[in-house]
Image 1 (cartoon, protein in one colour):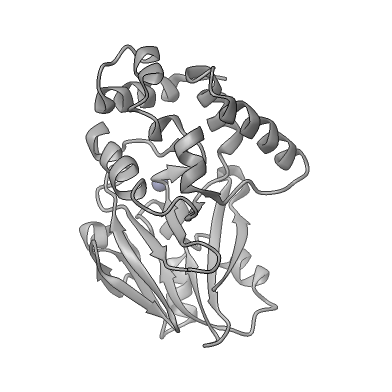
Image 2 (cartoon, rainbow, N blue to C red):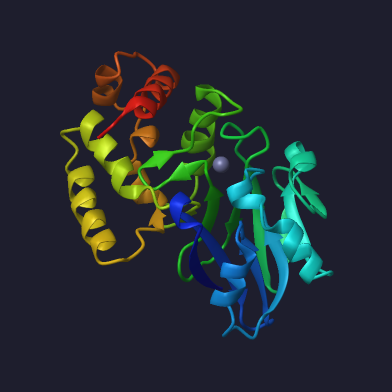
Amino acid sequence: MRIRQIPIIPRMANYCHVVIDDDAGVMALVDPADPDAVLDALADETATLTHVLCTHHHWDHSGGNAALARRFPDLEIVGSADEAERIPAITRRVSDGDRVTIGGLTAQILSVPCHTKGHIAYRFADPEQGDALFCGDTLFVAGCGRFFEGDAAQMHHALNTVFAALPDDTRVYCGHEYTVSNLEFAAHVDPDNDAVARKLEWARAERDAGRSTVPSTIGEEKTCNPFMRVAEPALQKAMGATDAVATMAALRRTKNDFKG
Ligand SMILES: [Zn+2]
């Protein structure tokens, strides 16, 4: 499995990820919201495009589906059965536990509603390099998506039951480059966490050099991401909460108003 990352829609700091099976000569696009930018970037690829893997219905993730479907009539466009009516050009509706095969690769569907009511993630097993998780706007490096169509209990389940159960070396490919601002917030609410301070310094240097900070790993998120540390007494105290779900809710509210 080979993975490429294409920055698209600069004002939204979006990433489209490309999953390529070189042996089978096929590839899949995760959230290719700007088809022209994506296809330009892939001009050097010989693999055949067979799948679009859509994480959720927001336009900056699904907005390229219709144009790609017109251009590639055999394209399989995969999306959540729980919000299929809002995903343009969807051809395959999937639910938790379903599997999607791309050449010799297999993605397992993880249902993680909250940011949107049918948000899904795609998990590819890769024993050599570590599994790869494409998680859209549910989990970000050191942050998480807004709770547009769900609540704190659902996000707690998504991050701290579903994703936290994945192996620590699972690579986390999220949908946006929000790492620096997320870590500034993490440093604010979790000031004694040295891992946050170190990662913030690293992330600023990477961005200054024009490089991406994505992917991280599940293991790193457990040490740096306040939304995956809601069971920590220090964070609960900082949020004035006494349980994980209330801490999740308070973190999200505080982050929504955080100006850095
Ligand atoms: Zn979104």
